[in-house]
Image (cartoon, rainbow, N blue to C red):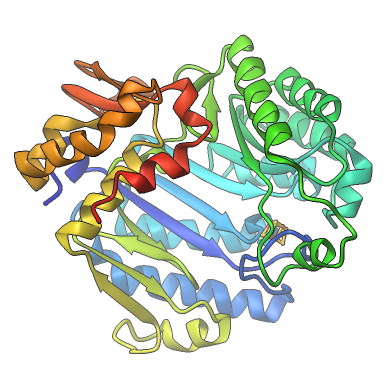
Length: 402
Ligand code: SF4
C-alpha cells in the first residue's frame, strides 16, 4: 500500500531505554529506576531482540538509528557500545546515517561526550524544557540551566555538533516574558534543531493532581497561542525552518528519523513499549520491563508483542495525521494512488471549508527534500497555513471520514 518507492527503502531502528534517575512531575512515560543489574539484563535483552528480529526490516542498510526514552544517557558508554556492536553485526549504517541519542543535560560530562563521539552517535537531543531554574526544580528536572551550557560545550568539544534541544511552553508560572527568555537562550546556543511542545496535563501524573487540587493553574488558550506564535517568530528569525508543527531546524538539519515517522518510513522498534511499522501493520512490545526482559529471548512469545493490521481507513487516517503535521503537507497524488480518486475527492470536500477560510491550502510542489537527500512529495499538496497551525488538531481530525 505504501506508495512512494523512495520511502519503501528507507529503514530506521528505534531503541527504547526505559530508565530515568528520577521522575518529572508532568511525565506519564513508562520508566523505571536504573540499578546496574537491571541495566545489564536490559542490554542483553535488547541485543537478543535485535538479533532475533533483524528480518523485520527488508533492507540491510539503516538510514537512521534513534535511541530514545526514558533517559538513554543513563546507559554507560560500555552498555551503548555493546548495543552498537550488535547493530553492526546485522546492518550497515548508510554513509550519512543519522544516529541520535536522547540525553539529559546533567549526564553529558566531558568524558561521557567523548565516549559518545567514539560510538556511531552523531546527534544528541537534549531535554532542556526551560532555562528557568525555579521552574526546573518545580518540574523535578535534575538539571540546571548552567548544566545545559556545559553539556553543549562538552558535546562540541567532543566533536558532536548536531545538537537538538526540547523546550516546553505553557508551564505553570511561565509568563510570556519568561518564554521569550527561554527562546532567546535556546537560540543563542550553537544548536541546529529545536523542538517545542505545549505542556499537557496527563492523568495520573503529580502535575495533574496539583491542577485538580487547585494548586496550579493551566495556561489559558490565548497565552498558549501567543507563546506558539512567539516560538515561530523567534525560531524563523534565527534562521530555523519550521518543518513540522513542533519542530524547527537549520537548513539541512531536519531530524531524519522523526521525519521518517511522518513520511511512511519502515522502522523496527526494540525494547519495552517500542513500536514497529512495516507499511501495513504496526506492532509493539510489552511496556513492562520485566516481561520484556523475560520474553526477549523468544520473538514469538505471546506476551512480548501486540500486533495490529491497519485497515485502509486506518492507513488513510495515519497518512493524514502524519503528513499534515509537516510543512510539505499531504501529497494528493500519492493519496489518490493509495486510496483512490473517490477518496481524494471526498477528502477535498471535507477540506473545502478550511481552504475557504485560509486554514488549509493547496500548493504545487515539484520536490521537497529533507537534508537535501530524499523527495517527500511530487505534486499538489494539501497543507496547513500559518493560521491553520494554531488549530491543527481540530482540523486534522475533522478531515477523517465519519
Ligand atoms: S526524564 Fe524524560 S522520560 Fe524521564 S521522567 Fe523526566 S520527562 Fe519523563
